[in-house]
Amino acid sequence: MTEVSSRQAIDISCDTGEDFGVYRIGIDDSIYRYLSSAHIACGFHASDPDNMRAVASCLHRSKVRIGAHPGYPDLVGFGRRKMTMSPTAITNLVLYQVGACRALVEAEGAQLQHVKVHGALYNAGEGDETIAQAIVEAVRLADDSLILVATPGSAMYQLGREQGLRVASEYFFDRAYNSDGTLVSRSEPGAVLADPEEMVFRALSALEAGSIKSVDGKQVDVAPDTLCLHGDNPTSVAGLKMLRATLNDEGIAVKPLSEIL
Image 1 (cartoon, rainbow, N blue to C red):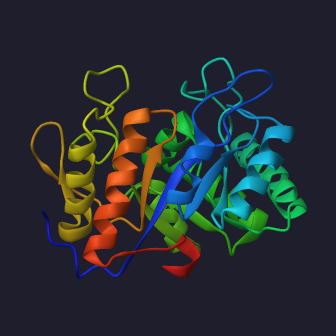
Image 2 (spheres, helix red, strand yellow):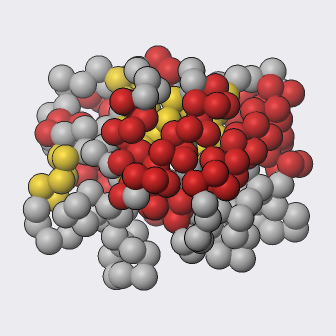
C-alpha cells in the first residue's frame, strides 16, 4: 500500500443534488456520511429548488459542508455540452446560481463554503482565460470568502489565486486523466474507472506523490486539496468506502475544505 502518512488531512467531496421533478439521478443520501464536502447542482444542468433545499438540509444534518455547483443552462445535456456565451452572461449565470443556492442553504441554517462549476463550463474554464475570468468574477461578486474549486494549473485556478480567492485543487479519483491534466472525455473507453481498488491506489498516489499517471503513461501533477467522486456511479461509491477505511488506517483525517485551506 502506498505510504501517505505525511499528509495529515484531505477533503472528500461529491457532486450531488442532481434529482429534479420526477427524475431521480444518483444515490446521494447513501454516501453523505463518507463525505466532508459536497457540491449541490443549482437547477440549470440538474436539480430544482425543492431538491436543492432538501439536499442542503440532509447535508447539514450529516455535518457535510456545502458548495454551489453551477453549470450551463442545459438540462437535456446535463450541462456536458459547451455553449457559446459572452463573459458577462457567464458571470451572471454563475452569480445567479450561487445566489440561489446560498439562499436555500442558509434557509436550512447552514453556510455556503465553496463554488465548483459543473461539466462543460468547468472544462471551458480550465483552458479559456476569458471564461475562467468570468467565473472568478462571479465568485468574487457573490462572496470573496467562498472557496473556488478548480483543476490545479488551470486558468481558473491561476486567476482565482491571483485575484485573492482561496482556491482548492481538485482531483477526481474515479476518472482517467489526459497528459495536460484534463479529464478524459466520457465518450472514450476507460474515462470512468471501473475498479474500486484502482481508484484507491490512484488517490493514495495523488496524496503521497502529488501526481498520477495519465492515459498515455505521463505523470500529471495534481497535489489535491479535495478528492472528488461522482455519486451516480455505484463503483465510485465502493471506491469511496474503501478509501475512507484506508485513510483511517493511515491516520489521515477527512476534513472539509474550510478546515484545510
